[in-house]
Amino acid sequence: MSWETVIGLEVHCQINTDTKAFCGCSTAFGSEPNTQTCPVCLGMPGQLPVLNTLAVDKSILTGLAINADINLESKFDRKNYFYPDLPKGYQITQFTVPIVEGGHIDIVSKEGVKKRLGVTRIHMEEDAGKSMHEGLDAVSHIDLNRSGIPLMEIVSEPDMRSADEAIAYLKQLHQIIRFLGVSGADMEKGQFRCDANVSVRRTGEPFGTRTEMKNMNSFRFIKQAIEFEVVRQIEIIEDGGKIVQESRLWDSVKNESRSMRSKEEAHDYRYFPEPDLPPLRVSQAHVDAIKDSMPELPGQLRQRFETDFNLSAYDADVLTQTRATAEWYETLVAAHPADPKRCANWMANELLGRLKEAGKNLASSPVSALRLAALLDRIADNTINGKSAKDILDDMMVSDDSADAIIESKGLKQVSDSGAIDAIIQAVMAANPNQVEGYRGGKDKLMGFFVGQVMKASRGKANPAMVNQRLKALLNG
Ligand code: ADP
Ligand code: MG
Ligand code: ZN
Image 1 (tube, helix red, strand yellow):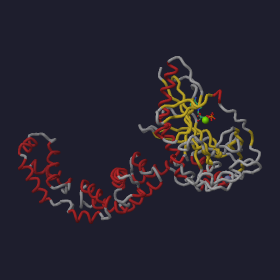
Image 2: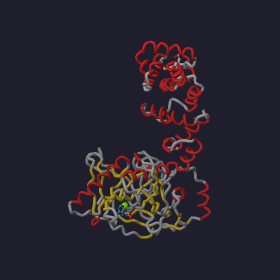
Image 3: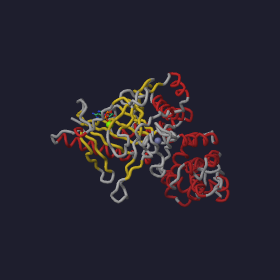
Image 4: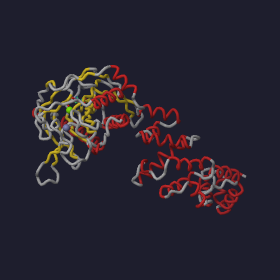
């Protein structure tokens, strides 16, 4: 019997408010350690937390975006444990009643298959500080700037059946969060981190025992970690062993995971209701107002691009990766409205490809949407062919010249004069009598050879459609 993988994901996402969850300290990233702290987030006795309502609104917006239910009354609890980066000795978190329950995220597999993945809940909590061990002469330091930054923990149902599905879910969630503007979601800054719960079972059997890989912040590592864990678990079971429920750490240097702690060593967090905060109450009217403010979501935008611009699902996906990418495309289409498909091809394949090679992105692109549109206009009116246009775009990447100026200075104007093209064709035919005979004797494939020769002889400037048409006429004539 074959094996099936079961995955459930927990995502910790920093909510991008200017101030922390329960005090007025700044959340700015990268400041000197311990410069953004106060008695509340340092865990001094007798200090009272005051809830950041913007963090609440952003959690609600996220819940609404994934079609979840918003609890008009939710609760905060204390999760008790000792760790040096947790000065209070407990974390304030929503345990018994989270603000968001249910909902789902839709993914499309590489094979184009759609799947709906369930979300169990989103609860609000606060981040811990940061221990720093590296480069400090065997001494550990603590930075409490992060202590008290608001987080959303987004917990999925165990609905994923492969590492690829898990990554598709994470990417879609990441994109939604970026579109909503509720988090910077910068993975390198730890603003979007994932715990992956993984188990395996033989098809049709109940769920197996899971392990949990903690705190990963790169899609690539998450995929590697899941794939490694699946193989490890299957080997253990096939050798007659049992999976131990445990937390594991992924070592991205050694490409392997190792045990952190097993369930027996797991903390008993002694959750109890946070006595310093009243239940969190929001009105339905407030939730409705947040719903009305919802921006266009990635799925809606993709759909609109497919319908309005007649794009393939693939192109629509590439061009809606970020809101800025989509806006760039829309500016391009507005300037070259005759052919949205051409705009998509040139932006997605030619421009983005060149930008990537140059280590740049759209924001730092030397070619603006309007400059690219002017180049596409010259393809549309047959001034240049596609081959020349690619060379011109290369030039535009490293100069401020317009497409027209480059066409002029390099003499790239396409030859669409049938007399001139006929002359080239006749020269090519005279130079290749055997091929002419072959073609006339039925070797149709030689057409490609002739097109190539004529284009070469014209130094790429001949109008390809006209070359095809005239070649057929003269070869058959
Ligand atoms: P914990 O608090 O210990 O992390 P949760 O009940 O919050 O436990 O579950 C954490 C995650 O584990 C959820 O995303 C859930 O979907 C996933 N999960 C639960 N059971 C399994 C299983 N057998 N295999 C894989 N994932 C699982
Ligand atoms: Mg967990
Ligand atoms: Zn503070």
